[in-house]
Image (cartoon, rainbow, N blue to C red; front, side):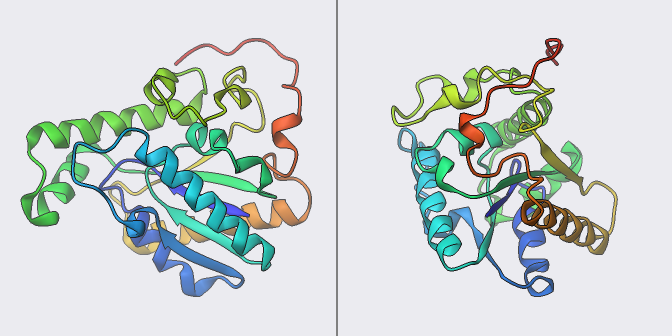
Length: 222
């Protein structure tokens, strides 16, 4: 299965992913950007195309009986829409978040001051969108679907509501807590998803894309 830690820059996704690597058996850890990141402005559809590349890598691990824990910016809706996503036998996503003041401090302290104030504001705006998207698939889907990669199958989830059990994003908010506690939370989340997967209770298991949405009242947009 593919386990994805998502969120905007500065939240600690990669630090947490690699911190749990030695605690878990049968799992490999990678960071999305290790395939290389082009200088801004990014080429059109770069993240979507690289997400598909990582899904194919996850399928290779899946064939070998190994799970992939991947950190990176790709949100749930984008992951579900890449061409090869339905071939995965399990998908789970967790949002790694942090308060904007901490995020700003971390971004300013890293990458040699590469990011100016406007770029940092954009990271904070992307973080706010991630929070809304994690709660409800109908929260500003245009942010990722508009002018998207033609290969993307957005229809797989754009009719879903927040009540659909397949639309589940975990949350670890690292604001104001020791790193060790956040690592424990990520380890627990990974373990819970893997147990649910083995027991046949993971909502995004094989054939998730072919399931009809459950009946119920429409959700209120956040």
